[in-house]
Image (cartoon, rainbow, N blue to C red; front, side, top):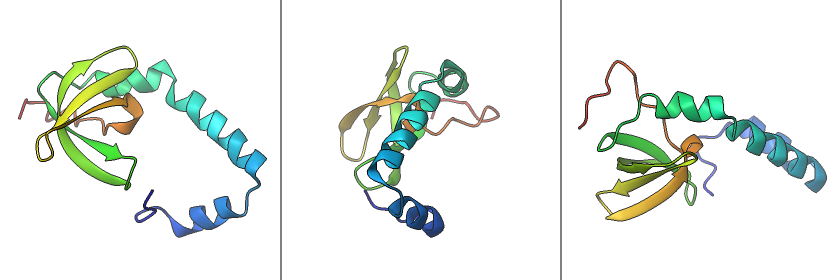
Amino acid sequence: MNTQGIDSKLIDALSCASSLELFQLNAVIARMLADPRRIIAVRTNMNLGQTVRFLDWRDGQLRSAKVLAMTATQVTLHEEGTRREWKLPYAAVEAPDPLNTATT
């Protein structure tokens, strides 16, 4: 993953962590991201057909896509430029601005 845009101090601190410490941190983060309150916060302002931004885990870049489907834990997106479908956890999607939720 491209670390561009991530605070270099954070990268340096994590580079010094042991594998066990990184594993523990990963477990804590996974639990926090799976928190239903976080999922609801994203889903509340999301509609089918709406354009949202998501994080491409392969290169760390934000991309735009339209919402095709929503399940309890994942959203299916269609990236028009590449015609690729993505099934992602809600944590990977930027919560739309509640003041601008019109379908685009």
